[in-house]
Amino acid sequence: MNRPYRIKAVLFDFDGTLTRPGAIDFALIRSRIGCPDDIAILEFIQSLADETQRQEAVAELHRHEIAAAAASTPNSGAEDAIADLKALGLKVGVISRNSRVAIDRALKNFQQAGAADFDLLISRDDPVAPKPEPDGILHAADCLEVAPEEVLVVGDFVFDVEAGRRAGALTAFITNGEGGGAPPGADFTIHTLADLLPLVHMGMPLPGGKLPQEHLDAFLGEFHWDDPSVLIWPGVGEDTAAVDIDKEDSLVLTSDPITFATDAIGEYAVLVNANDVATSGAIPRWFLTSLLFPLGSTASMIRHVMAELAAVCKRCGITLCGGHTEITDAVNRPVVTGMLAGTVSRDLLLDKKHMRPGDHILLTKGVAVEGTAIIAREFEGRLIELGVPRATIDQAKTLLSNISVLDEARIAVATVGVSALHDVTEGGLATALEELSIAGAFGIEVQVSRIPILAETRAVCRPLKIDPLGLIGSGSLLICCRSHAAELLLERLEASHIRAARIGTVVDAPPGISAMDGEAAAIWPRFRVDEIARLFA
Image (cartoon, rainbow, N blue to C red; front, side):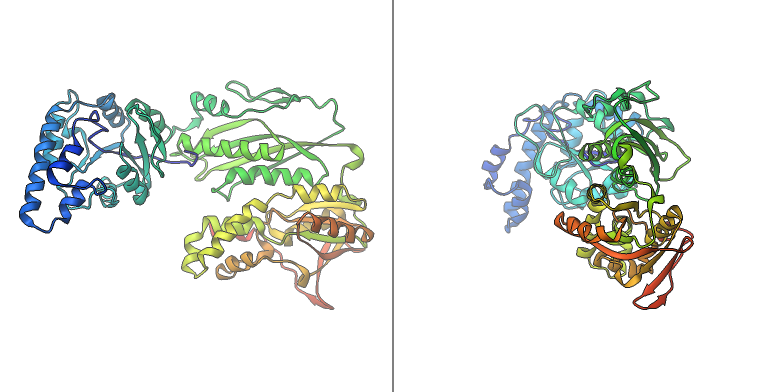
């Protein structure tokens, strides 16, 4: 289970889950009532047109169920699991295709648990369609006053998993020590009910303060690195990281927080910081991060972000070498602050003060790549209400994979004549060009008609009345180069399947942006805050 989750209620199947499997002989029942092997017993009985035949089948089923209930025993760990879940403050219920009479009879064989220990008991006698229909689980969630996605359904049969999946609940398949895997769609596989508590703990809200040591130690143990330059690795009790830079020429440092994105926040955190390092011509090497989670966060949520950070770092050749994790009421959504260090030889270090009048300004990909992905992921419901096709929204979500500028930065650094790099971040292209102009101490003339805007960006921005030029834009790199290098650089980018456009030039004027639309002057917008801030507000 790699996605984060929260658990507020647990619904158990009964036969074979809370009781030991094998007490009831389904093959014998099928034989007695004439039920084919490819039809479920309850559905077969319901399909019988003759009322007398149907009543006889029900009576036969009832006789076998009561006999099996009388002979049944609690499954291993069942009573402890019920008590432990109740002690955690979770709602606990039963959802079964059995009759209520059979459930009550089987519960008489339990020593420490009875019907009163369950917040809800749903049997086939209740007016809801039985599993694999999701109706009973949705009804239980409503009665228990929890969201369906906060319910864990535990069972030993494919119907349990299918019903839970269709209701949007979490599902745990119990094998009872038998061979074979879980049916498709199961979120967890457990072998005994004793395995249930650890995965439930991962879905419970954590107390405020540092991430508990047992979780931190377990999570860090999942990540393995092989970087001989790291002298002190992250671990419980380690408050610093140490790296050996004796063989390096220049150390480049950057730090950026991620506060807007809650979906794929780890991906954003690594790439946004790596982009900054790459604009200096350096290779991103070592990443440290502080993770702040709001009260109510679960260990699974934190593990998900940590795993994402580690995976993205490994993909980019970066070592995740330290940080801090805390649950606090100072934030109302996850915040990831990253600090990344990189190395570069002194002669390849890029400084924006190397810009000169006549330099060309290139932009890769298009404006607002990051902002488009965030809007599609965080405001999908609103976009659908405004008539944006779901296919367009799904395509916009995939732009998350394009927010790295490491590839184009490497190409630019290797091209003679490149004078400066600047990645587009908060405030969009409008702010990024102003920043580049100020850092380089020259004016920039931009041709607005040449600025590439992706179709997905137009589709999500137009109905929300968002200006793409002021929308957070990691994924786009501004490249400043001498005029003679521009064509070669465009060819190299195209050969690597990276779109780029020549959008302006450096001019001999004080810092600032002058906008042109062909030969006519145009208005260049300024944004006090990023356009996406208006959506989150």
